[in-house]
Image 1 (cartoon, helix red, strand yellow):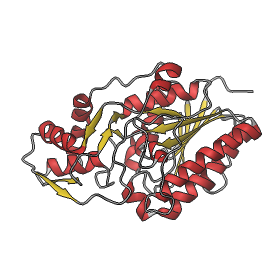
Image 2: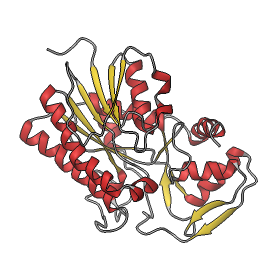
Image 3: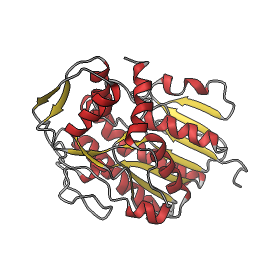
Image 4: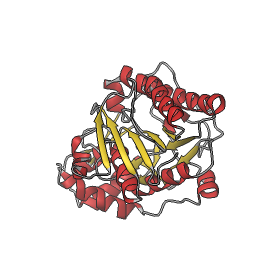
Length: 314
C-alpha cells in the first residue's frame, strides 16, 4: 500500500545536485530520506533542513546494505564523486559507488516496489565522435585513462539499471546529466565554473586549458532538477539527456565570467589534461518530446546567482 504522501530516498543528498533535489521534492510534498557519507558532500548543503519534520538524514556509505523501515515510493541514486579532482582522488570509491552502490540502491527500490532513477552523466559519451550527443550514441571512452573510473562506473550503473528493469521489472529511469552549475558547488572541486569564478573574484589569472577552443554547455541547477523530476514522473525507461544545448568555448566562458564579476583577471593558457572532451553539447530532442522540458534560465541570470553564492565563500 503506497502512502498518501510520497516518500523519496536520495543517495548523495548532501551533494550539490542531491541537496537541490531534496529541496524541490520537499517543496512538492514528498517526505525525503537523505543518505550521504560526506566523502564529497557537505553538511552546509542540508543545514537549512535541520528540524524539518519531512526530512530525515542517514550518514552512511551506500555501498553498504541499505535497510529502511516503512514505504518508499522513489529512489534517486545521486551518490558519487562527480568532479575530476574528486574521482582522481577517490578512483576506487567512485567505481564502488557506481557498481556496488547502484546495486544496493536498486535492491532497495526492488524490495519496496519503488521507482528508481540513476543520475548518469554526459561523461559516458567520453570524448565524443558524434556532435551534439544523442542518447543513441554509444560513446568513445578510454577505459584505462584517468577518467575511466568515473566514466565506466556510470556506464556500469546504466547497465545494472537496465538489468533490474528487464529481469526484476523495476520501474527505472536514467538521466544523463550535462554540465550544470549553481549555488552549493564547491569552490575547489576542479570544475570550470567554480574554478573560473573563484579566480575572477580574487582577480587572479583565469586558467584556460589548451587554446580554449573546447566547448561546454552550461545548465542552471534549477532547470536540471526540474528536468530530472519530470523524467522520474514520466513512463520513459531509456536514457534522457538533460542539459543546456547552448554551446560556449572555454575562452568565451572565461570572458563571460570576467564580465559578470567585473574582475581584473587576465586569461592564461595551460596544457590540455588527458582525455579532456573537446566538445560537449546535449541533443535534448528526447527531453523536449517526452518531458516537454527545455532550459529556462539564461546564462547571465544563472551566473548572477552563482557568483553571489561564491562571494560568500571566497
